[in-house]
Image (cartoon, rainbow, N blue to C red; front, side, top):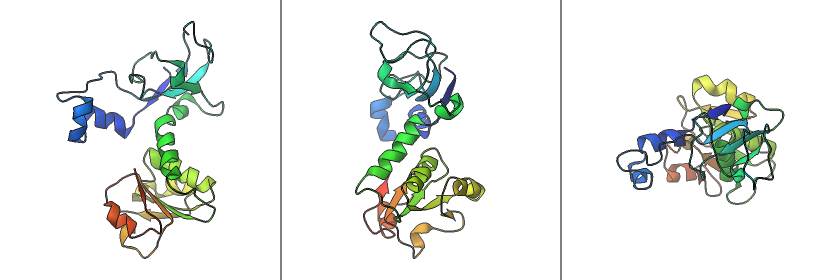
Length: 205
């Protein structure tokens, strides 16, 4: 292990949130005590059936389906848990990608494909999933609006957002602007309130 990232999902699992989820994660405490999902590191050993990697390879991965454990000094999992670390990224940077990046991509892929010029709003643009969503939507040619706190406005703008809404000053669900797609990562507002600001149905995550 060279790096691991902390996701909201790690904390939800640790604290048993929401309460109904405890039926699956453990009623009195986390059923799985080896926490940690996203990681980056170097291969120390391989099993006889491994063909994709060799000792010394730099990898990153998501341990969600492989018993967690990214907060430990070493992890052991199927080679399917890992991918080659991108050459241009540090271990710290690579460890932030697997779960948050996939969730952003999945959220923006629901429904019809985003087209150049579509108006896309990302609520929660400065968390873990939001920054990836802003960059992906921008790369697809969308006109991106990010919603974040005052101190994160500069960050969200630097990621490619064309417009930034400070949620401490403005409620996007009460504005007159309408959007082709809303990805609500924060999910602090009802789907109905968001739907009033969209042309198709919104995507909540």
